Image (tube, rainbow, N blue to C red; front, side, top):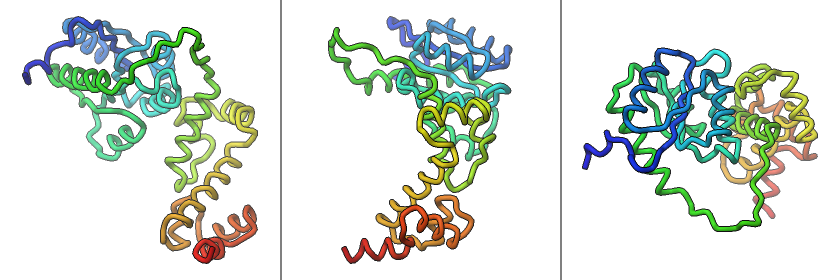
Length: 262
């Protein structure tokens, strides 16, 4: 039975999207997957990969981490922020062995990693495992002819990806340039789209998110005020207390005390 993992899932015409900006790596994977019976689509950078994922609806994506125009992490954020591509399994391709990089990719929604240089049997085995898992967990779609398909809105996808990145990095106080880079866009476009979709600037949203997260930590944990300040991106407890009081009219300590006495 174990040998079945190294064979293509024949009879289903599975579609694999390869996103890699290195022609030689693409050639190796293309030959391997086609010889194993898969239908293969290629993309040469993250932007193209995201667009081809939307148009071709692959069953699985092989996504290189290190790409020049838009890296694999930024691409994955967009894929996972878009309802049309959210459920497509993403396997990262990487030459790096750093645990932090692998953990970050898995937190973003990747299902696995394949290390370079590729071992053909491992590539096919991991693809088959995740195709099988995706098939098992995929919910049956009810027959509703009158239901209209969701309209794709790239601006909403971008904003969702930004919100997710901010939520994951709230303690780090990322700059606008860093946020734009991490979702594959540029600062001016990010600022314009975010304000149009949310009515807030990016940094106004960050301030609101910090207070929201701080309230949750005050309500649900026994963390010290300084520890909460650190977790939500304030330099010190005094700055946190000032911002909290300006937003809610009460200090964090008093807010927690009110919870315990109410």
